[in-house]
Image 1 (tube, rainbow, N blue to C red):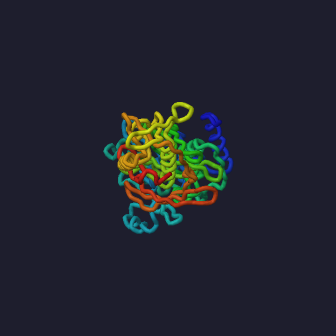
Image 2: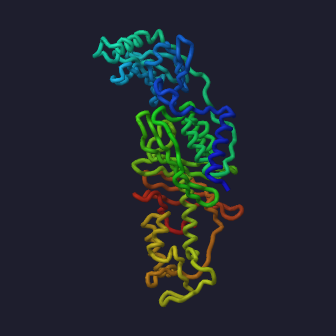
Length: 457
């Protein structure tokens, strides 16, 4: 049995294995509250004449007497360098920035004469952009104005820029994760450490193909300097058969100013080659530089892995209803007849004993319209009967050779609130069947099957 403690220990061991295998892991948190924001860059103590700032793409060397006056922050494709005044009553102000510019657009930037090229690599130009005037110009006699002006005047001579030519690559290490939560928590650890390599190691082969170009563009360093992830917690864990699971993770966020709203991640996991992997993921709001899709207009992302999970749940629901629901007592089922309907009826179990309970159960996977349609057809045919408010059905068994827990889904039609998927479902030892089914987003409820109840069984 895997306990939360052993899961965390295992995740720690796996993360350590990744580190020992040469997979780079970013450093979260604050290295120096005075000198720079946490995350994307690192301030390195150097010789007495200079200090060094280094991020994933480049390294800056600057005069050491500027060190206590500069603060570095990464924002999207900018590195913002703030002047930190000696006079604490004054706000910090941007002194200069390092911009990341597409080389095809660089000629237009160059013409403006306010950008200075520092270096270029792989179609990207890194350029210096100075503030138009020194901060605190309204206080020309102040020490902070004089220092800020001195830095700007000597910036081109005092700043040394070099590109970091070594880049991270996708991890080649194979990891076997024996528990779905291991995969989810290792992914969260990778997010917190800003290591795309760790995140990538938890993905399915299909998701790796999707995320590889995203992580490559980010140079295998995700996230931003602020806000950062302080901790994470699994808030919901829903098994779907023996080989699929859906996990919700809450990421607690913070900035130097205090706590930020949490981000809720939804992960769809499945077994692949004997290991639990993340097949799909989405967040309820933006998680910068992560590649995680955001639920749009309150509508959660819904991909093939999500459709396969819901289809497997629908098949289980169908056969649960067909078998009469949950039996309350052991022993032989008592049959009875219903005038005008027929003989050999049985009562449904307590969990499905009323129309309201049946509707609520089926609405977990189907749209309300399809549940109503199912009710109408079943009661008209006599497959369901309501007697004194209690539900009954003919006493019959049933089952299927189709294994929906191993079904593979592919997208046929994509819409904002309606999608259609094609399922390749194993049947028996060697056969497969193809089933197409539509899904629709139900406001206030979520994504539901919009096909006839019984198409998936």
